[in-house]
Structure formats: structure tokens, C-alpha cells
Image (cartoon, rainbow, N blue to C red):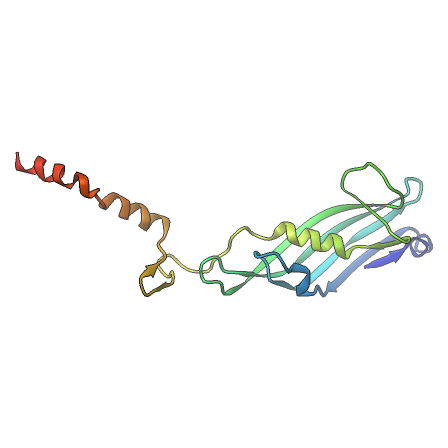
Length: 168
């Protein structure tokens, strides 16, 4: 998914694409919410507007991201699907969101990576209610379990008052 300006001019200024894309896991290094992606497919159209000195692309990206489970840390497959419209300019501009083309070569992969990163969930888990891990002296509780424990627990300093009320 890379074209030169001269290739686009020869192809009547419009291209359609539907490609399987390989993205190296190292791209996501430093991001704790995603480990890698697989089965990434990008389809869409792009066209060159020579009068405006721009290239426009409509992208549809699908695939599976591999994210760590927020509770267990195990890797979970999370399907994703996203659409985006990209604008590439051949000269510096003040236009927000426009990507500057270097060396007259339009490359869509950085936009695809950005689209994927925008779809990464904040947290994901496959653990069902009550299936949380526990160990020697520790346990993970659901929010509901924790709130119930707070209701049952009485401050020891106030325990005497509870007994006092029962004696009357």
C-alpha cells in the first residue's frame, strides 16, 4: 500500500486496494494494552487531487489484536474493525490531520497502525464472575463482592454501640 505520485497519475489518479497486512509486534513495544496483531486486512480507495496537491484515502481495517487480560495477564484475541479517512499533502500545510508525503511516496501503513492503536480497549478480560485468581493470602474480588463485604463489616470501635442497643 505504497504509491508514488507518478504511479497515481498513470493510473487515472484513483486506486482501490484490498490487502492482507503484516505488522511487526515491535511496533507496539511500550504499549501495555496491546501485544501484537494478526489477520489484518485493509481495503478501500484512494484518489489523487492534483489541483489541490492532495491524496485522499478511505480505509476499512479489520483484524485481531492480541491484548493482555487485565486480571490474569494471559493473551486474549480481540477482533477489531474501523474506518478512517486520510488526507496526504505533498507540501507543508496548516490543515489539521493531514499527513505530509515524503519523497513523493504515499504510504498507508502508518495510518493503518494509528487506526489500530485508536481501537485498543482500555481493559479486557475473559474471566467470568467468580473465576478470579487467588493465591496464598490474597484474592481478587468483584466490585459487587467488595461492596457486600463493606456492608457486613462493622468498625470495631462501634461494635460496643451495636451491643448496647441490643441490651435495651
